[in-house]
Length: 132
Ligand code: THU
Image (cartoon, rainbow, N blue to C red; front, top):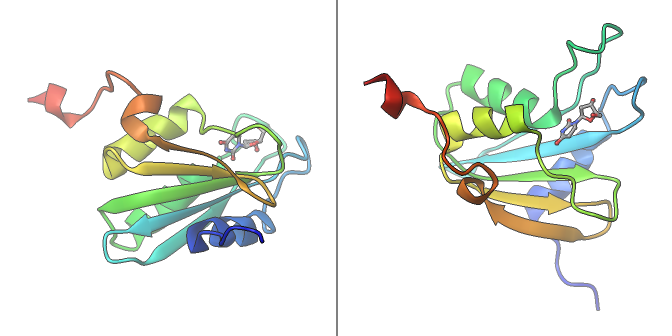
């Protein structure tokens, strides 16, 4: 029997369906869980100028913050890859700003591919503590 799938992963898979990725064709979905259990999703949104592309994780964080959420527990990230697709460096930094040491769940379309703590993906982070 298949192990039960985490609801956060299922939400990220659903969000991936909305990805706008005509250039890379690499579709990503993310689902961010707030401290009170609310789930805010995101997908990657590409642009014809390429550099303005925004990753799924950052879309989720910016949506959440713009709706008043500030404390997060977990994020699920889904891509159609056998190996885990980890968040890019820029997204790790943005996640750290609001998420702190949150749990990062990586998954593909059928199964989980890894669970990490953000501090292990972003050792020695720069953050507000350095600003005094
Ligand atoms: N991408 C994400 O949305 N999240 C990741 O964790 C890795 C990369 C997107 C950006 C771009 O639209 C496409 O995947 C290829 O890099």
